[in-house]
Structures are given as structure tokens and as C-alpha cells.
Length: 328
Image (cartoon, rainbow, N blue to C red):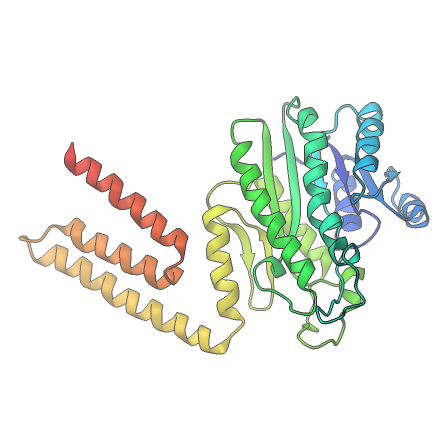
């Protein structure tokens, strides 16, 4: 996707990922609009980033979203990219009876319902654009829960599921749907958890993360192939469909030395089976080479994906396709 001469709206753009997105996208020659709840932070962002446009708005409030839509589209009718970045993360003990029934779901209002409502409000307009995109910022905690922030992880898991469905429903439109699975980074959102139990002190530089995300956007990584970047201590990038499930498995494996060893063993076994299948198909004419290759594919899938539901589904599809060809 061409990231130049676009009109881009970023929620939660006064700090962290949102502010870094705004900075980079302005440098690329885009019109950038950010939202936030704090007028002081909005003024500071506008002062520090020349050309930045700001609107005070709270994504947890449906009425403010409706008002934001009218203001933004009225002033920027060429808006074609929406980045849902606003988020809230709290340490919550589920044993704490002082937390009220309204307060317990505050993160859901901001992190999950906010992006859903933003998309719902701006979708009719975006569909009219020749080229458009929606980027939802989720988290590695959508894949591996962080127990001391249980609601946050749940919201990001929900947003991830919603993004997948959104991508499917918009596949025949001009809108590309992206997901940024963000790692723990050096942002205000994560500062509050510094040195807490279970929270890594190795935080990623947000500048590096946003650079990676922008490259993913520019390359249009929205197909069934992973556009993600996996590193030993970070899970980051734009993951979609099958690629995302591959990334999840690798991410979980890298969190455990035991699973690291198990992964090496799986690949070793896989190599032997695969080479054996090739040898059998080559040296024994009475056997169909494709049978050995098919067995190797099955073993690869089982070993690599660890019998995940998507792996079994893909196997079923493959078997069904081969069966139809045989019937013909």
C-alpha cells in the first residue's frame, strides 16, 4: 500500500504507538489526524509535530465517536485510513470486591467496543474511497494471557477475532484490513507494570516496532502468508489468518526452553520422514511418489502446528481436494 498522500486518523495518538505512528506517517507525506481525551496532551502533540491535526474524543463514548465522524469527514473528506490504537491496560485482581460492575469493564469499552464502533461509524465512508485501510492494534497478550491484567488480554483477543472476521467480510471491497500484534514496548501504557511479577524488563523500542509496522503496510501484507516478524524476545508484526497461527505457535514455543527443545526434535523427525518419503518414491516404482509426499505433508503439519484446529482443517481441505480430483 502506498503510504503517501493519504489522510489518516489515529485514535490514542498523543503518546506511545499512536504518537510514533503520527510522526512517521507525517514524514512520509500524509495528512495525519489524531484523537485523545486529554486536551493538554493533544496540544503538546500538535506543538511538537508540525502539520498534525487533533480532535478531542473518547473512543469509549459512542456519542463522541458519532460527533468525531461528523467533524473529521466534514473537514477531511479524503480520509482513507483508520488506525485503531487507543487502549487502556490496568492491573486488576479478580479477588478485589471493591471493583464495581461498571468499572470492571472499562477496558472493554475502550479496547474492544471502541474500535468496533469506530469501524462501524467510518466504514461507509471508507468503502467509497478508491484505496483504504483499517489497522487494528492488538497485542501479544491476545495470544498469551498476562494474569495480572486479565481484562486487557481478553479485549485484545476479542479485537483480534473481530479483525479476522472484518477482513473476510471486506475482502471484496477496496479496504485492506491489517492487524498489528504489538509486543511489550517502552510506552506509558507499560511503564506502570515495570518490575512487576511476570512482566519482562526487556521492552521493545516503539520506534523499531512502528518502522516494522509501516513496512508491513507498504508491502500490503494482508494475504494468507505471514507478514510478521518473530524474534526470540519479541512478537511483533502484521499477522493474518494462517500466518498468525504459525506465529502464535512459535511465540509460545520461544517462551519455554523445554518447548524450544521439543521444536528441534520435531523438525529433526520431520526431516527424516520427509527424506524417507522422497527416497521411497524415487527408488520404489511400485509406490506412487505422491503418496510418500502426502504422508510427509501430514507429518509436517502435525509436528509443526502441534495438531492445531487450523492444521486439521487444512488437512481436511487438502484431502477433500485430492479426493475430488481422484473421482474426476
